[in-house]
Picture 1 (cartoon, helix red, strand yellow):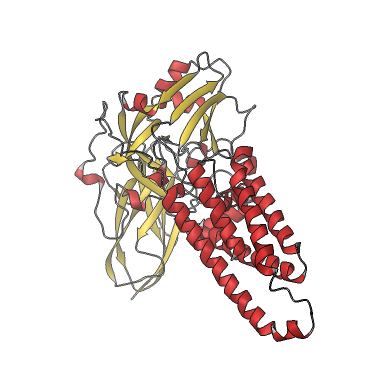
Picture 2 (picture 1 turned 45 degrees about the vertical axis):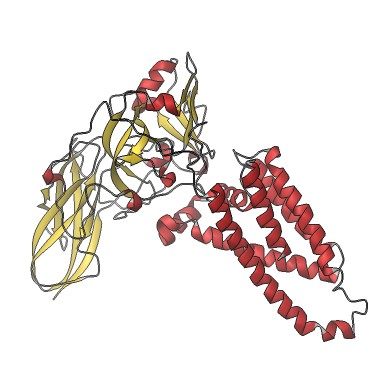
Length: 494
């Protein structure tokens, strides 16, 4: 209970003082930074967009175990449990100091709460420590076990309460002011034609609603960003450093564009992909003001939480709709999707382009700087690979004989989809019907009407890009630059 109370106290002090992350958040994010790629992919495979949940549960479990150890040690020998608490506090302080929004100043809430927790632990257990360790200890053995279990439960409860209070006081939200008043776009995105969405039951809609848009990032808690103080800094290999406030950005002529984003961790047939209309300022306009120097070939974007992504300079300066986005599907960015400003870059996987909560653009060279995931074994460059997916029917389903509708989506951002083919039981490839195209930066739906006969069947899909490239059937995992292979589902026709 004492240890849990110290954690809650440190978290509350950090929140109210505004010095940086609390101990739970700092330890969790330090753990994420040290997590090897294979473990990250395993977490995403097992838990999808809820991959942070098991980490949070694990931290609580470990905290309970260490609290029990501290209590037992303090009961056995005076000050030994307090030393355990002090050691844990120093580890938490080190994790806090290592965070981009931390530093040495941010460690005082952790150190103060650790000192208080250690002193309270000594004071609470001092009266309970028996002088005669024989009969008195035997008489109290049952009571001690009961107290230990109660203490573990209280620590767990304290941790959960601390997490809840932390989120309520800012760790889970970012809106530090009124909602953003988004201006009308100076450049409107063309309205999707009616034929862009086939409206087939079970098929992903053309526009992904914000609550259903995938979220994969390195933030344990959603960063808190005050829109009144947010500022973008453009620096590095430039003639002129540029700084841009949110009010200045909103006062620019903004562009609206439909762009499909996808995560490099998306397995063949996966759902870590979504399509939305985005509102923002073209990145090329900001970079033009900074005037990159000859020899620069990369922009290292940096989030307020320290995450970095390496994006080719040429991609951010050509005519594609690479945006400093402030709006998503007609509203301000949701907190979990980068409020108040994020990067949206067509044609690249998110880990090298789609920086949320962006705060810096450093113009540099691939030979001189590496990004967050590059340091962990992923590719520094990662254009999206042409992909396709079967949404209906679901694998393992049982279907009635006769005409069966097969439908799905295909994407090759900034190239475009020219054709989708389907085959049954390794037979001939048959052309599917494509939904109307909106642009080359978004996915296209497809449909194929299959005369199904009784029996067990395998269904596969492949796509062809407007550049003539046919999606490969060779299976490859997501590391280092995206998965390949044809999506296959098996069905039983009755």
